[in-house]
Image (cartoon, rainbow over all chains, first blue to last red; front, side):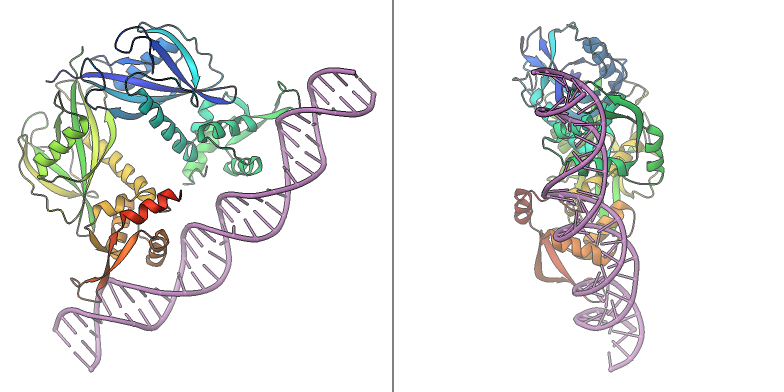
Length: 224
Length: 224
DNA sequence: TGACAAAGTGTCGCTTCTACACTAACATGG
DNA sequence: CCATGTTAGTGTAGAAGCGACACTTTGTCA
């Protein structure tokens, strides 16, 4: 059967200083040597696609247990100047309390986080892949709990709002946002406060999977 | 690089007698010989994924120019009992005025349409793929013009409503449905009527791509 | 020409969305 | 310890959209 090379590429999203970032690695080899690219690599013969993603993520960030989701498969001709390569793109949502150790992987000389607003030129068609990932993330934000997956276990409502603003690319009204969140009734308020700022401390919340399941059982859709 | 076989499989949707149907082919070879399966086949080395879909569709139905969209890539181990096979699933929307010539293709002994409500047992994980396609179609119906792509060029409002009902799997209120359609303002009413029934003839409409583009320019989302 | 069958048409109450401004609580520094 | 700065936290009113609901019109066919 035809010699088609199969890879996975991963758009890893992460909140840093209230802004959405994407993980990029600097390529150590040709093609596109020294160019920034998405983390990823070849799928092994006895490895499910999802497992390849988990493996690559671990190799590049030493992080496990993050939310992953398949985006799209890019299979045009001429994507890779050397071989016929088809790539299955994924996105991953890395909570901001996970501390990824950005390690130079086997085929990556360097790795770092870039604001989605200010990405460098990317190798292959990776700019398209990031754009697709952003679109998917924006959509998912509105009817799933994807937003919480970018936050630490305990977070303030303002932090949550910043996620939505940074992903959607526009400012939201504080009172409307909080009303919607309250109506959802999926957050457990804690008796703890975030005292890291230099003003009034904000209450911390936890996302409650249990309450969320109840909503789904009732057939209530996510109104974000 | 690893010997991974890459295929495409296509969920072809079609309206027959006001009901949503899916095209299936009876497999002529093992594995799953004589079992019903989705049309599809191997991707060739110098062929883009989208082109492979177009080719397969033409081979199985002799139909060209239908709307196609990638769904998801199924890449688990053990999908195919013989080789490691990854399949990129697509869906196609075939308008009900296209007359597909269901031809026995090279690897298909027989082909026919099945109601989505009454599918036979399917080969491989094709049942999962159809389910995924249905979900996608249901979602797209609500915020895109996918519904019109299953209809002939000229159609009645009742025909349009039947598409929505058959895809969504529930009945809709005639007046509410028509109000929404009217508000959308993307249909051109014709001075022609459908006289095929045995009662009051229904006005025919055409979907207007031009009007739809205007809506998008204004930033108005599709409220279906 | 009468019976049948599908086409076509409006309203009202309810829910949901957006726009909008002030007070409360804590930290910091003089 | 008090004044200042900064973010947290809170409610309402008007507009728009949604679902539920029944009857008249217009053609076909026997």
